Length: 213
Image (cartoon, rainbow, N blue to C red; front, side, top):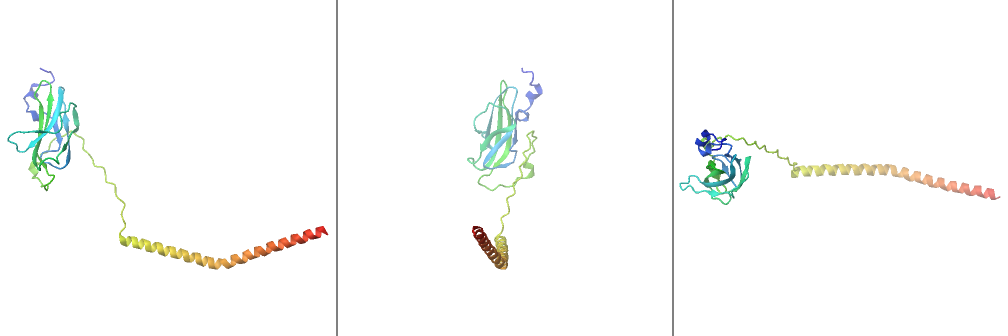
């Protein structure tokens, strides 16, 4: 007999051995839809493989339907499988994790009362149906949603456009008034510069004529 397996462990029912076979999510009585990620632990010193399956609840025939194939990789507080419930008829089901070990009977954990509600309204279960289960899995903290920029209402858009039109009109009026006030002075100064250049050319011409004489 293997030394690390105590006699007290051998006497325990299969589903009462947490740390070897344990489903932490979804929990008993939980309502699920669509694609469901099953979390938990599947590990053992003599680990061979683990497999997930579901059945009706209740199910007098004890018929189980596998969720994917058996996997030969241990999982510690992580994702065990992806369960697509869209092809399953709405109703109540059981979820079973079975860990196969070398030389011993498999270890199992069964979650009861899982309510698949893809096509029917989800009812609120009575408080006693939701059983708290201890878990060592890390709590997943949802990332804060990014706030979308506020979209202005039509009335706000109109007031913004009106203010922009008023400011544009005032700017145009100020520019026109400045042009009307300064244009005569600019034209007079330009004429003065033109006459001054003409006089300067005439003075240079007279000076050249005197030099020739």
